[in-house]
Length: 184
Image (cartoon, rainbow, N blue to C red; front, side, top):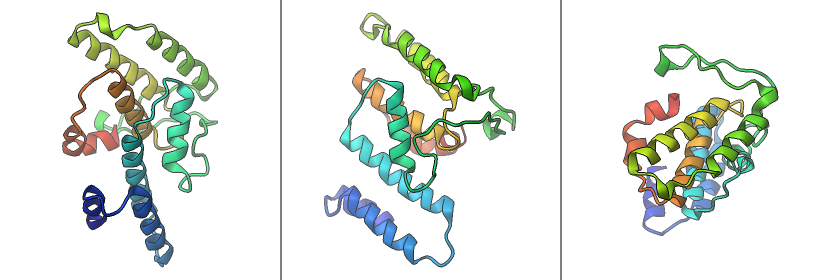
């Protein structure tokens, strides 16, 4: 995988080539490591969406991102969960966040997006901008609309959103704190 990443950076192969190579690799595996497969495919797809730089400020775009990232991995890719969840969050000393009731996922996201669209970031100083975007991120993450893959989906959505707001993104933060990102 590392060689493929280097080849991609050097323009020798594209993300589609990487995904095709991953498919060949996992089709040959006698004993499949599902988590490894998920990580490889989702990582490649995240990079692809970051390169495409397409963004729509709409909660349905979160469903589109989830469907794209987890297609062929989860049968519920791009579909809101139909059950309530709790998760022992390592970062919270195995306590759980109170996630949105599944019956309210769409209405809560609709409300959060309508409130966020009213915000004029050009009239805010840097600290106010950070405060508001942090609150928005937290609110939509706490909805946890999918059975799995929420953090990666919401993080990618927020990165794309921040780019439209002309925030500078430091991707090293994700590398240096990947455990927190993954286990958030």
